[in-house]
Structure formats: C-alpha cells, structure tokens
Image (cartoon, rainbow, N blue to C red):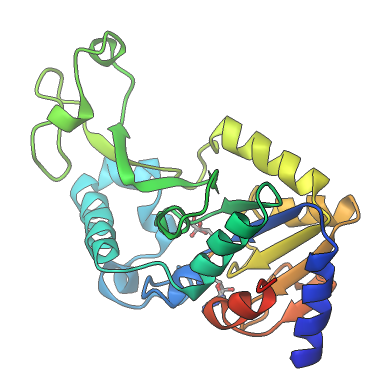
Length: 248
Ligand code: APR
C-alpha cells in the first residue's frame, strides 16, 4: 500500500485539476450506514429502491417519511470524519484545484468546510413540495409552514412535503450535473472515494474522466464496479487513506 500511496500522491501533486467523486463510503467512518452495508431499522426491511422513489412515497407516505426522519435524526449525531476534513483542508491549501462531486445527501462534505460541493443527489436537510401547485407558484405556501404530520402537508391544498433528495428514476439537478461533467472533463486526476459505482449518471463521471485522459484513483476497502477504470486502487478506508494521500 505504501508504494501505491506514494504513486497516487505523486499523481495528485502533478495535477492542476482534481475531481473527487464520493459516495456513501466516505461517510461510513462518521457512523452513517452505506446503502450496501446498512442492515438496521427500515434498511433491514426494505431496499433503498423500495423507499427512495416517488412511487414508494405516494403508496406508503408514512413509511418513506419515517425512513428519512430516521436518517435525519441519525445525522444530527454524526460529525465529518478525517476523510471529509482532509479534502476540505486540501482545498484551503490549494484554492480552485479540487472539486468535490458527491452522491451523498448527508451534508458532511459541506460541514467539513468543502466549498462548492456538487451534490448530485440533493440534500437530506431540505424539503420540498411533492406536487407543483398554483398556490406555491404564487409563493402563497411555504414548506416551513406546512402542517406537522408524517408527511407534513400544506394547510391550504393538502400537498405533502417530501425530502429534497433525488429519488431513483428522477432527473439530477441540471446545474450540479453540468458542473460535475465539466469538472470530470477537465480534471487531470479523478479521485473516486467510497462508491460502489453502481448508480448512473454519477458513476459515468469516472468513465468521462478516464476518456479525457485523466488518471483515475480509487479509494475503497472493497472492489467496486469502477475498478476496471482505475490506474491506481488504494484498498483502504477514506478516513485512513485521504489524510495521507492529500498531505501536501
Ligand atoms: N471508506 C471508503 N469506502 C468505503 C468505506 C470506507 N470506510 N466503507 C465502505 N466503503 C465503500 C463500499 O465498499 C462500497 O463500495 O463504499 C461503497 C458504498 O457503496 P453504496 O452503499 O452503494 O453507496 P454509493 O455507491 O454511494 O451509492 C450510490 O446509490 O442508493 C443510491 O442514491 C443512492 O447515492 C446513492 C447511490
């Protein structure tokens, strides 16, 4: 690992632009369960695909609302870990040189101090209305003033509130995705941290970086679906590897 770490650090030292693609694994050492490893609570009974969809929310609003409420509650108790902090501190030392693109909705990169994080799957901390509605377009209703409930609803028209995360099958935020594709297309190194690489279009950014000639470095204790793209694979955890990889 030492030799691989030295080679990866050398790659990064020569990189003018570094794009980071992170997934749930970078938050694992903060105590946030990853999608593939989670076995507790609602995770054990339902697959994310059965909870993180609009259809699941319309069929079982209380179950889906409760799952997100459970995840939000657990987030209140966790902190960014050494992996998040290493990225944020690197950005401070090398302004404009590193772009964080994340699939995570936990806000831990932002809390660690990373700027301009491209959150492709939205944010667990925010809500929005489930359906577009004339009242809301006129600004007559505010999510913050929704009637409490599981889920909360608009007192005027009954529209339910939903988490402002991107559910399976939904379009990613256009601006974030466009900026992420720009970062992937101009980077000299793409650092892929803590993702199984199973969900697109996020995982496609690693293919895009490889296609423009960027060095692809993977940090993950286990194999991932992006491994065949990697020039270097560091088989370690984010909190262990990133501080040693980015300490320049
Ligand atoms: N450090 C680095 N990687 C880790 C660590 C760690 N400490 N612990 C686990 N991993 C790796 C696992 O080996 C796995 O490859 O993190 C990855 C987590 O994979 P997933 O749980 O599938 O999470 P992710 O790839 O981010 O999922 C992508 O799928 O469920 C949807 O929208 C959801 O954003 C999510 C997307």
